[in-house]
Image 1 (cartoon, rainbow, N blue to C red):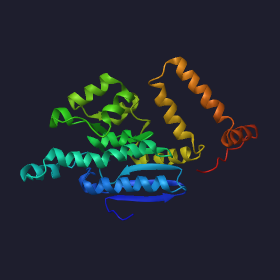
Image 2 (cartoon, one colour):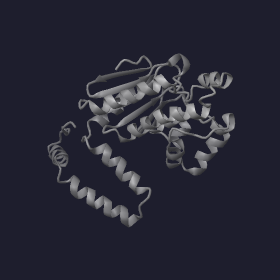
Image 3 (cartoon, rainbow, N blue to C red):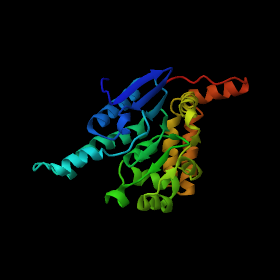
Image 4 (cartoon, helix red, strand yellow):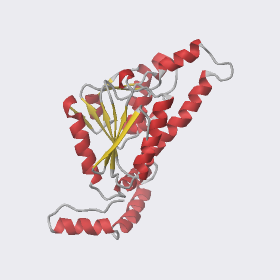
Length: 269
């Protein structure tokens, strides 16, 4: 992969994707989005990878839309393509990134430093676990500052994380949500001291990488089903999935490990 806007590396089954336009706090422009989709695909296809960390270089995780580019297009309009058409094409590239992260066959840890704003919030919420530095915050400028709607999956993910009232309130007021409050509201997994963000993200990714390889797909599916099922339907689903899981190789290894007081050694994907 050769895209300077996105860095990719693998270290002992942990893949790390870093947004690398740090001087501008990683706005979501064409090149960065292209590189991000390619990096996620690389993590998906490399069977050595058992967990993924998504992080941003520089002073912020991601500020969302590249408004400097939008300003250029507003001041110098293209008669053959409106700004709306350009943004639509951009979202057609970015939305598959969110889908790919949600469907990745390994756990995704998002490490948030500085600001996650606009579409950067949606990108963060596409992870399975979000860990944020204490000084970081989340900001939705769409309605109050721009007269636009939240995108990158925010209107789907945020109400599910913190409830409709808080999600709508953040969207309408443009209130900057500190990482500590985001943790208290259940929006993110953990808020850590700034200097511990990298260490804690890697530690968490390694813990998740040690799970059975199919666990993250099962977890996503069963918790998603719970949001639409009745209790009886969910109980039936739990029963059917459990019957299949306990007949698998991973469950047998887990039971043997527990009975002999050792850490389980689950096979890779």
